Amino acid sequence: MADQPLVDLPSVTDAPPAAAPRPVRATPRSTPRVNVEAAPTEQKRGFIATLDGYLIVIVGILLAIGLMMVYSTTFDWSFQSFGNEATIFLQHLRNAFIGLGIMLLLVLVDYRVWRRVAVLLLLITIGALIAVLLFGDDTFGARRALINGSFQPSELAELVIVVYMSAWLSSRRTQIRSITYGLLPFAVLVGIIAVLILRQPDISSAATVVAVAGIMFFLAGADMLQLVVTGGIVGIIGFVYVTSFGPGYAQGRIDSFVSGVADVTQADYHVQQAIIAFNNGGLTGVGLGQGKQKFENLPAPHTDSIFAVIGEELGLVGASLVVLLYITLVFRGIQVARRSVDHFGALLAAGITIWIALKALLNIAVMTAVVPPTGAPLPFISFGGSSLVVLLAGTGLLLSVARVRARQTLPKWSAQAPERRNLIANHDRSRGNRRSPVSRTGDSRSHEAPVSEG
Image 1 (cartoon, rainbow, N blue to C red):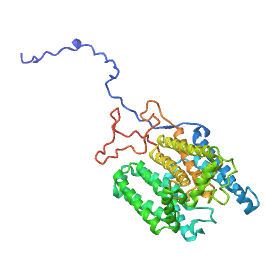
Image 2 (image 1 turned 135 degrees about the horizontal axis):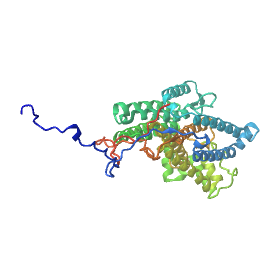
Image 3 (image 1 turned 90 degrees about the vertical axis):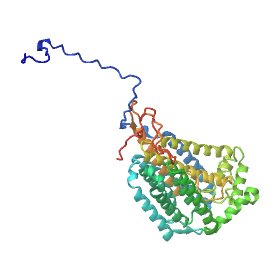
């Protein structure tokens, strides 16, 4: 009895047969779907196929209008000064070809390269702004150009500040909501550039730099309270500077603008001549080249006042077409920003679009007596080497952002497959809630596609 086991163990021959493997069942529909994030892959496509045709067509039409209007506004001046009606027009055509060459070069280069050299570009620009104050050419009481008036560093500064702010803001992300790491260095940097431009003096370019940088700061997710307070302070400082420490003509322009609001006959001479041009043009205009206001009436008809000449010679129809082209350009630029593959590209495309829009809006607003007169040229249309070349360079960067996106392809099952993603500011702006928004599938991670910087 002692040798018997307490429990009867089954013999080897009595062991049950091995259980059959369980069948693999499909995942129940109630199970949350897992979003698989797939890195975008390069798609081999021809160079022409990756270009944004809409942007090219819009800019091309604006350039064509600019060539026509520059010839119309300069043929008499060119004949009297050089004995040839086309001399100044050929200079503008040369500048356009230089700008188109730079634009093509920037389209071929991946825009992400400029993120690595943004600091160097900023330092070069600051050096050029200092150089123009020391060695610049004096023209009408201002020092704005180098190399016999052929290069204006303030025009370059408007584009470089967009490139640098895109790189800086995309690297800071949520830190820009901090006063120490966000608002303070932002204000110091933009303030340095603006002060150097104001010393020339060039109020319109300084205002453009501050406005574009401020809007980019907002798009990147800046704290609204900080932004409003800073904007108010900048506005007060700007008003005090213009009225007390700025160039003498600035106060006179503000006074005439205020007077012209109540009585247009008391408006600035420049504004009055522009209004006469629009009245002469009517609905369809007097005909290309047939305008009379450009002859010793409108100041700078080939640059600052060129929109008034368009209104006189092409009428309301032609002026409306130009405005519609700018609106379409802005719409397309915002689409490029929304579809960008990374945060830097989104801010770069948005910044360039805002920059072009503000310059166009400022020129048109001056000609329609909405704001006091400034020296802002009309983008892609006004005569001016530095302005045209820099604007075409910015267009090249915008096309590069669109081209990189066109070369990227994502599987349809990927979480990043939808094209329209908000890459500009994807975090909550509220001060109390700083949690990331949760997607419908329960995944709280950012859906930004990981893209290498190479």
